[in-house]
Image (cartoon, rainbow, N blue to C red; front, top):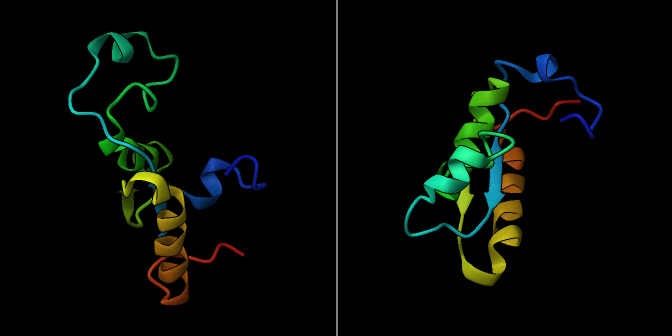
Amino acid sequence: MLDAGYAPKDLAGEKVGVYVGGRSQMSIDMNAVLNAPNPILGVNQNYLATNISRFFNLIGPSVVVDTGCSSAVSGMLFASDALRNKRIKWPW
């Protein structure tokens, strides 16, 4: 949001989706959680999209996609489908 020219308050409470392509871990590394510079980054990837949505107060879907080598592309496909079908907000 910051690099896209939006202040966090501009999209707070809006139906903005967070789609993340990432690999999940089998267990939480408590040392990584306790030493993380940002709490969003210190929690298992399964909760990454939800934590981002919660941090910015976004109310759209929060999805982590783990398809091995195609996670980022799959996440983009889910996001573009949600935009086309108006399940998430087109901010401009």
